Length: 417
RNA sequence: CGGAGUGUAGCGCAGUCUGGUAGCGCACCUGGUUUGGGACCAGGGGGUCGAAGGUUCGAGUCCUUUCACUCCGACCA
Image (cartoon, rainbow, N blue to C red):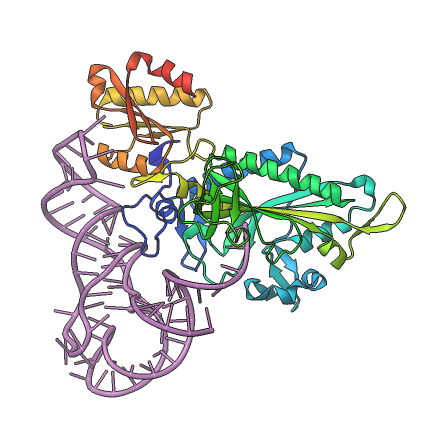
């Protein structure tokens, strides 16, 4: 992609309502844009691209372990929620409206009812179980107080998954499989996170674990061990405090976490309420044992930046980066710089590397500031030193600069990408 | 929903107290110069001052009503 053709409105101005780095940099970097309504954002091309990359990581790992992607209707008949009783329980967070025939609908904030409805219409026998269905699409929650940009919007991209089983044991097996799968997803995205025991909240059910991205700006207090992967929600681990020894012996530490994933052992709460049954081996109707598993995909973007930024801008992790490499031509009036930049750009494209070529008319400083703000992991800077036969290879994390000769730059890049 | 604020150009803000031709910075357009850390000069475009009503010769400014948004608290991926 050529920078000059890309819609990426970067800005020096800090939005007046932004306090978190992720909020500031996602807007300043032209990834997202405020709609004007509270907690509503447009995704511009670069933001959408990152969203899709993160989405794909989630999808790939889920599909690997047998989950199947679906897409339930965003608009849900309120009648389904009357069956579960949540239409009256859920409160004002639930956005309700009527169609032209005066029927009641809602914008789904989560889809237990809708998915149970799908399964009860489809699954009749224990032979068709287990089944794990998910979707990655928009959710709407009319939050009391939206804030922090993508961290707590009203409209957001969420992966919600639901599994159906003939026995509690099988549901628990799936629950642990999902825990392991979520760990792989968070690890691939380059996140420092902890899995903590949690309350089950509105959804209900017994066992429940939260995936917390460690960041000072998090809204949840958690207690963690830096020596092992222990972590617990403070509300749950009331007896523990900072300095206490962990089960591994190292001292515990208090910190903040961003909840980006949550998995539940649901049991039969929804299947019973919606009368969703299958015939078991004995030929008797039995309610599905269920698990439910969520990941805040758009919140992950914010979480990645909360954990990976400096005072200049974003530092995207490898799997989340909008481009693998950026090539910068410092001065487009220098024919040699342009020639080398175009050559490297064409070569990288040919190799299938997702590369951004900054060939704008601007001066070096402006382009560098934009590079730092946008946060592509690596850059090749073609500039003044080209007269000495040298270019620079920049690593965004730490802004280390390495001089590389023009003769060896191609091999240097091919080795790395 | 309680408490505190803010609505003026795409963004960030001044002007409101004390009524008198709507301003600044960034961004944008034209021309020229410039090109290693967000350039400079000259010219230019862009506003029913959140909305409605009122007071007044005259309202961004005063009064009334209303809407939206932000921040602090209780909820959540």
